Image 1 (cartoon, helix red, strand yellow):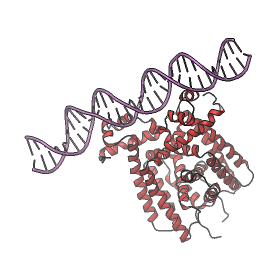
Image 2: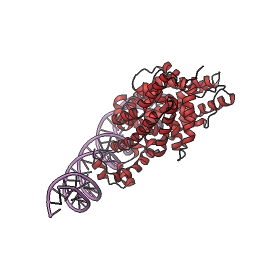
Image 3: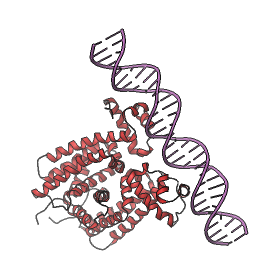
Image 4: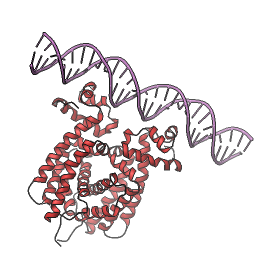
Length: 195
Length: 195
DNA sequence: CTGGGCTTGTACCGAGAGTACAAACATGGC
DNA sequence: GCCATGTTTGTACTCTCGGTACAAGCCCAG
């Protein structure tokens, strides 16, 4: 794939809205051309097709997730505190890129079938969170889990799906509210203990 | 839509595999015809198109989820115990219908765009779990959450995504293992407390 | 045995993804 | 200035596939 010029990349972000609202299948290349103002021939000059446009958008956002998560993971504090930071990081990106995140979740299957994207999700999220959990276990601040990788996935699922409810209804995602709710759930669980 | 005869419905379940493996878009009606042995013309006699075949498969499985979840919700015991039962119920259905569940998660966006299916997911899962959480709060066994609905969604996300990791790698989903891991996560959280 | 709905083959239509290509344009090295 | 290389875009085309049309055969209840 040729390097996409900046002005084109910017315009493309509105395509994410189309993908998120109507699904990839229902979004015609001509729709993208119309909405972005990039002529169809130009789109095909840079991308082999819809799928690649989607991958391009995902790549961008996943890079951001990777960066923010990496910072959160490497921040100082207990593993629990860093995990809370990771959750906050994910929510921050979801709030910044609502359309792409909606599309990403809505097309999870498709994303998983693009090897590059699947690898990025893994490297950007599951892998760091997994080792964060492992750290926490050895350091003694987190509970021993039978399988840290699916632990990481469970955390990802909890954050993503509850954030999604805000993305599809409200436009503004109240990060603080969700962050504290999900963090409490993930760290302390739903069961109430008498203090 | 005409009532689909049983022998046809049975054959259709193999279509779920196609949808889950290659995605709905990549699955041609003729592929479905070939894989199921149901001629294309017959498919169009019963369904208006791909989308309706998918909805048919989802409807079936979501009914099962609704039933199992309802039983779990109405079982006796504390809200926490019943929530654990709900998680187990969801995993049971996912293990029974791996292909459809993979397709359902992979096509979450599409499922959400079919109003009937969106309503079913809501009624079968979010709604009962939400009121289960509310019950638990009033009865004092569960922590007060700011928004029970997204609490329910978070639980759903945690269960679904971690189960997914098993569905796409192993074929057999080790229910007990995941159930206890996710239940612990949801009820008691990751943070380790000194007993 | 006959009329209705079921089942299926075959032929067809139209939308839209992707390709081909050529004309314009921009840019930078000579 | 001028050529070479790469970008940008319009237009016209092909081809796959979803969906429709339809007719012939089938099965079964009345």
